[in-house]
Image (tube, rainbow, N blue to C red; front, side, top):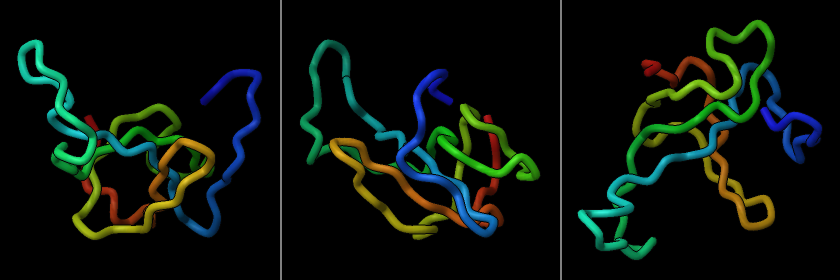
Amino acid sequence: MNAGKRSLIKYFKGNVILKPLMGGEKIGGILIPEKSRIKVNEGIVHSCSFTASVTEGEHVIYESYAGFEIKVGDEVFIIVPEEDIIATR
């Protein structure tokens, strides 16, 4: 996804690594604090296998309680089984 940059984490055994999206970051001109934001089940595919039904950079919607969160540096990712991705945008 990042040209010229090597990813610190990689998919494994049918999993997809997502960069989660947070809902409600801004209302009008008011910035909502991170702790008050609503968690939505949407993300951008960060890493996946070439045989996956999704591609890197694709916006996806995944099932509630799917996968688990990991933190790499300051970034948060979610590792989700590919079968828990229910739609793309």
